Length: 226
Image 1 (cartoon, rainbow, N blue to C red):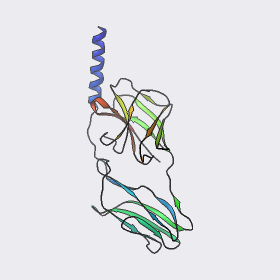
Image 2: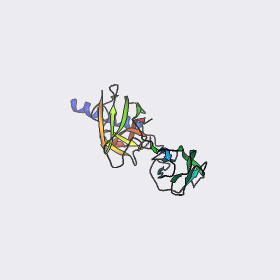
Image 3: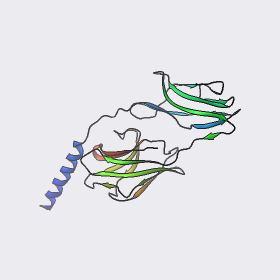
């Protein structure tokens, strides 16, 4: 009888997990300026860089065009090379050539010193997208060689799922292209994940995802916000 009960419990857990599976993995494509600068010293240059994420949240090469709203103050070339010519400010835009749309822009001051913007801590709230309990707040901060994810003490997750895993992703609906952090082994209270990956920062991913890995089914997520 005990063995039969265990089998029934497992079948119910699996069925519930599969029942939450709704595939809709398209997201808006976007371009982000990855090394924004607040001000650039007159007479100096700075090379802006960007990252393009396609409509499933995967990085991909694409053609862009850079523009300055006032090229007499700040000039930008086809490779994102910025030159401060005289005091003032200008809006620098990166445009996706495929649709001729401005995808990201920053306002830069041509001044007496160069100030590069750096990202601080980001945070979010985990919420269930299934019938299983999952909630809690979190903070993501930069560390040497990666990021640290601090899960708050109000976190709680159901331990009834077979193979609950946590990921970092730019798509809230799929773990395709996501960075696997590991299996969930703590189901309540504060804990943390240290994630080491080359070039990984708080700006690299937009979502913390929880998936039932054996059946590739989403359980919940938290958007990583400034």
